[in-house]
Amino acid sequence: MDGISLKGKEKEGNNVNASAENSDGLEAKLEAAEIESKQTYERLLRISADFENYKKRISREMNDLRKYANEALILELLLVVDNLERAIGSSNEDTSNAPIIEGVDLTLRDIFKIFEKQSVKPIDSLEKPFDPVYHQAVAQEETELYPGNTVIKELQKGYTIHDRLLRPAMVIVSKNIAVASDAEFRSDGDDEIEQN
Image (cartoon, rainbow, N blue to C red; front, side, top):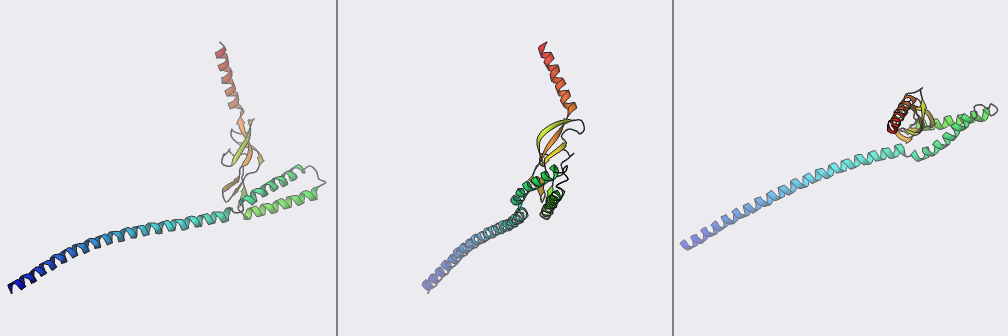
């Protein structure tokens, strides 16, 4: 009987060792599964955040697309507006074509109403400081009437659409005469010094 009981005890010892090894293996698998689950959850959170950002970006782009969809058409219409304004400006002296000019003026006003509905606004430039964001300077003119870098003439109106620049205003900017004379005086003095 002792032989049988020893064999039984050996089996029990082996079972205990096997159980301990299985327990350690299961704990290691459980720990690995928990780590993998945590990593998967973190990845899910990142992907979810990326998707939310994507949805916001697409929504912003769609709003911008709706806002500025007519931009190219309005740019083309600006050329027509320029021509209508020139026609009205050139015929102010001639009263024989008053009905025609009145019709052109009404057409121009209707176009401006359409522009207003589309949030297209002219840039107020005259007698304002030169701003390279909204103005395109084509010349400078010496004058004592305005401080330097002031818009004194507007050759072509500028426009914005929803606070975005559509077309810059083509302007002539003032240049101080005193500054130019002072600079010329200094250069004349330098020439005299060099000649001596």
